[in-house]
Image (cartoon, rainbow, N blue to C red; front, side, top):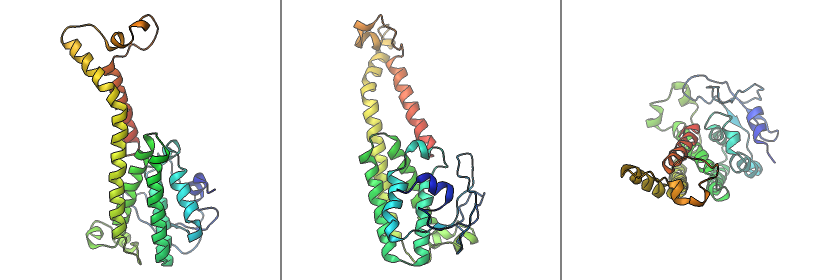
Amino acid sequence: NVSWEHVLQNGSISGAPSYIGQIDASHSTPLTTTAENVTGNVDLRRQSIRHLSGMIKCTPPETERITDSVILDLKPRLAAKYIPGIPAYILFMCIRYIDFVDDEAHVAGFLSAVTKKIKKVPRRNEDIDYPILWTTNTVRFLHILQQYSGEEKYQATNTPKQNEQALRNFDLTDYRTIFADLVVHLYDEILKRIKAKLLPMIIPAIIEHEDLESGSIVSINSMTSASMSNDKRSKFSAQDLLKQVLNFLIRKILLNSI
């Protein structure tokens, strides 16, 4: 199988040559295309603000392996070590190569595979980290497709250099609509999972709050676990627990730059 770390560290897929341009430290994301193999040390750690440029060679037989590695095999704990959006940049580097060789059938197949694999992620993983991770990357991928589409409304906010790097052969407008819908689907999945975590805590927290306002000292712990009153379990109230879970979810969302 293709190693995710290998892609990030070496800028190539399973030994295929990578066409890497310069690293730019500006806020924008130039994608310099070169036609020769370049070996360089690319720092993609979270503390780096630099962006990966160029393209990755991707042939039709490699599509399934690449999309499996970048999408299905990626664990949130590994992605957290890198700049948010790196998977989206890698996918677009493949698109740039396919555009470079002008293979219309391949770009359709590649984007179809990307869409299907992203949809599979929440179905295969119950952890909320997964839809959060792929909401971030799908939004980023959509924005990159817009930025380098060559359309005048997006060119207006690009630098001249970025406009030179727009896709030359493909109009991916219809695919952008698909990815925009996919973002909504992923966001709904996040909300559904947040709801599942919070609902069991909301009513006890409300009851506890009303008891405190009415002057009652009865805590939710004593209401629900009187038989365990002498043990050493946590003394957190239902409100405290609810706040902790909310803060935990917010940290996860911010970690992925949503």
